Amino acid sequence: MTNTRGRVFSFQNSKLHMNIAAVCWYTWRMCNDNPKSIRRTLLLALYARYKADPLEMAGPELLIACAGDDRNTLVFNMHYLADRGLVEMMMGYQPPLFSGARITADGIDLVENRFQLDLRFPPAPDDPEAACAELPALMARLAEEVEFCPLDGELRRALLRDVAWLQDEAARSGEKRRLELMLSVLDSMAAVCGPEENAPPSLEKVRRMLMACSSMPPA
Image 1 (cartoon, rainbow, N blue to C red):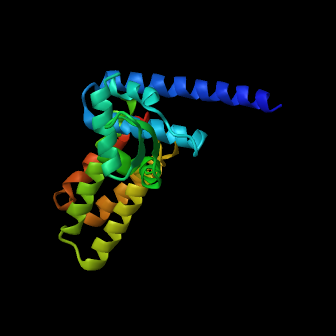
Image 2 (image 1 turned 90 degrees about the vertical axis):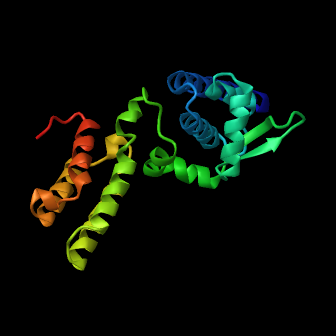
Image 3 (image 1 turned 180 degrees about the vertical axis):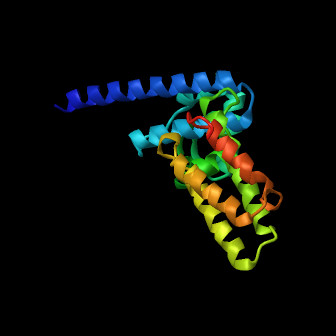
């Protein structure tokens, strides 16, 4: 019975490794030498590995496809992620190459916060996710503009609460993002700001990007 479970576990691990390697290689072909996109792919691969088995570490043979099968690129980006506290590595007999790696709790939190993940490690330009890659930075700019808009304190605080809600909503995956509600909040913010010349410049840009990231036709 134990041997049977062992064979099933081995088959499942093998299938997972093949899926991760395929995703790594596909993403690397799109991002090529973009370090941030490579680091994003490494984090996503390690997140998938952790989700399947939190106790098992991923070896370099699994992750090297994320770096285009280039050892130096893999080592460089993995050490960077480790220095940031997003992954941990177990060093073997061939340093600086690691023998095993796993994502940390901070790394998991980052992957699960789409807003922060896109902000720090945007997807490759040709990745389907890239359509909304600039949304986090645009939301941050909107928050700065609201902070200094010519409105009294209470109205400004209300607008900042709206922006904070929009940022949380934007962090959801595309299919869970409540677009109509987000557009309604943007319309409400525009009404509070008054004439168009008084509105934060990024307000309409956020609206247009949200429309571009969805399949909804413009209103």
